[in-house]
Length: 142
Image 1 (cartoon, rainbow, N blue to C red):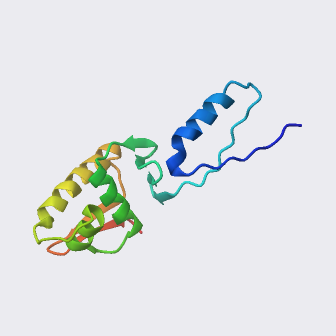
Image 2: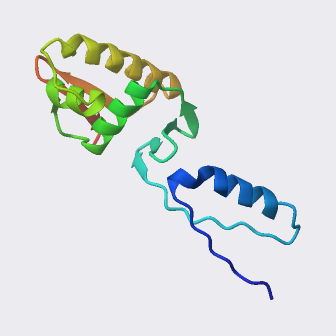
Image 3: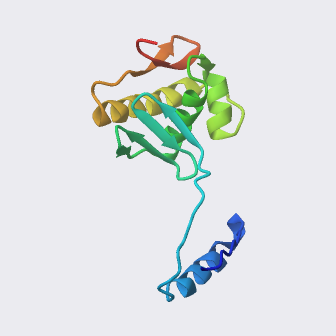
């Protein structure tokens, strides 16, 4: 019976991890087991893998920009709640808003809606605009 060896690396040690894995791949009896501790935001027909910064609609990856992805995560984590323009801007851009963020956020939301629709036209996920307030992610028929 083989031995079990557990090795943990932190994020700053990724090159050391790659070196160890390259050495271990030379041994045919080596089995790699990985714990699935990934954080996933899951909505009907949409899965967001936060550790990978990827989103999937019906198992198809959606190609999102950094800001689109961050907005989607924020809205999904707060589904059903209206987030103001100021809240979205502060969380996604990491700075205080100056009152002109509505157009910036609106542009990213428009692109995000298009990409979600392209990935799945029969979507039940709606990003609703609350005029002069902000946005809310809702699941239709819930």
